[in-house]
Length: 115
Image 1 (cartoon, rainbow, N blue to C red):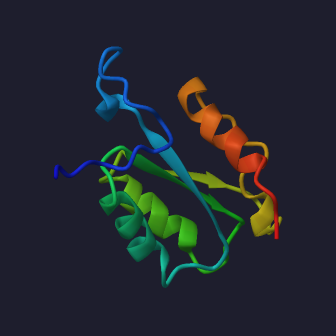
Image 2: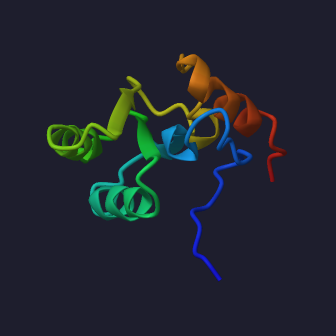
């Protein structure tokens, strides 16, 4: 039995190109996550080298964004979108412009039912 990487929602594209070239963007809305954000980023990125993470910070007064920016200095897979004020975690992906390869993931996420 061979081990395989998770498909990240894509089919095998061995004839078109290596699946390893596919990437996925994980969007994490945050507010006051200073104590957790570094560990969360490390945990997410350790799951698969094709993953990148976008932290959408709602103007956390605790310095969450500063920690993310420090991590970004040493890791090109970490990104931040800072919002000026608390707009709610549920709106954390609204209004974000992404490239064509990532827009498929954003649209799929937007269409998920909310609980």
